[in-house]
Length: 220
Length: 253
Image 1: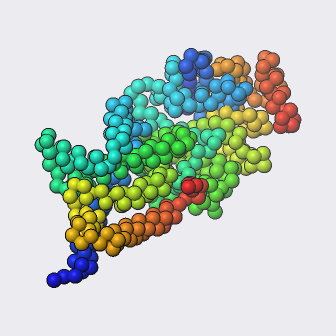
Image 2: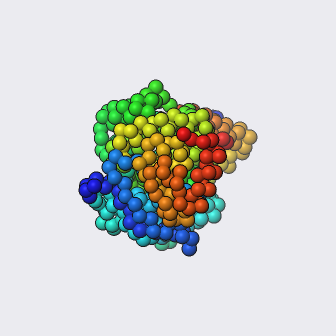
Image 3: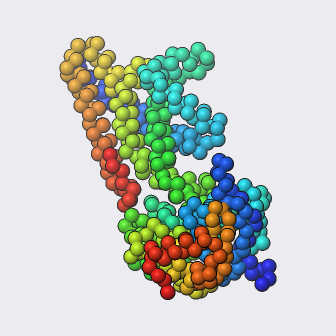
């Protein structure tokens, strides 16, 4: 028979792959969603901006765990079925995208109106102005906020266990109910989360330095 | 003077902001090669005139023509018109995320569709003309105010406009940096680059200005050759304005 550590660590490795799978999908899509929602709120016409504001208000107003339970247990009642994995990924994208859009919106608003005037006076369309002039600056301003939100997302991916995803935390809970070795089990899980969050933070710090432009530094 | 020589024509421009009349019927023409000066006390609507001419602000009433095309017509593609008008702002408004070179080449590349290498070449030439080729790779935050404004002039020139608007181009500069910007502007005026200049620099106005418009409360109250207008203005407000400026800057020769 396999020993506790052997079976726990091999299950944990599988859980870790699932956690990474959720994150690899949820992080980029939520960043894109955040950018789109943030832009919609600043540049959209009234219905578009209201719709975006409603979306953000809803998903910032619900605890993530409630969002996940609704997606997984309530939506099937109206014919929308999600596997545990996709229910979690969808919930992460909506929640994180809503939060990120606030950083994007604030960053766009913080860009001096002179940038826009200069772009338009060169004959740029509104679209070109936003793509070439406003967004590259706004993204740099929003970056610390966005990266912070991504670190949160890495940690709250552990909530996927509530809809039955066998990710790191789900595996840990399962093993704890079998072996009752809570100290060993949860501190191992904690170390894995700590390592992921630290690696991500360091990576973002590096990327932020790479994106840095004199005069566009963010004090944070 | 034939119709062809009129680059820009404004007719009866009105603009109000929430019930406040800022412009009350502004009409004038700028001829090819001319340097036209607009001056007047703060709040008289000078900057608003410039912005109404390229529709950065839409006038409530009146018409603007650029080389015979009606700018204010609903069927005119305003982005096409703006490509023919260089705009130099008081606050420079260089794109903060681009270096000097890219600031100058971006319009060529993204608006006029010039190939990247070609745009770069033209941008370098324009930077050389304002004496900044060695600073091409610096970002706006690494340039002095005077250098920024010279980059802004190069940027405005690069798209090969038929007229350049200057909106108080030296008002945000430290006194010792004003000279370098005025030198560049004078050089362009002497090359007969058509320009419309909102400024309080009377020395500049007198040395290269062909005509000066004096604005008060959204109206052009006096106009004439700068030298003459400054010496022999008809109205008290004009006289007071020039006196206070001369007091501030010292008597100009």
